[in-house]
Image (cartoon, rainbow, N blue to C red; front, top):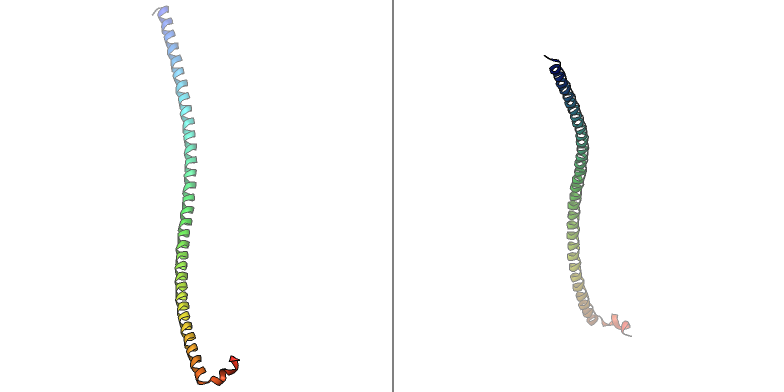
Length: 128
């Protein structure tokens, strides 16, 4: 092999070595970028998991409050129904008492009339 061939081979060898170094630098840079991307994705995943857990916790609180509210609504509806029935019963009793009172007043007026006819002397002082 001649000197020029040897120089050419050396030049090609250096060029290949340079290309290999450039490839390693590019691969290392890509690996660093991938590692940074992985770290960022891992952080974002952790944040998403925390936010999801907070949402689940909020949902569970709201669901529990909704159940408690529904139970309270049913209780109140039951109480309203009970009070309404008691009110209706009292209205019926009042109406019956008013009828009884009217009957008693009529009977009392009739008895007074009969008594006045039978005992006019008792009522004489009132007429004057």
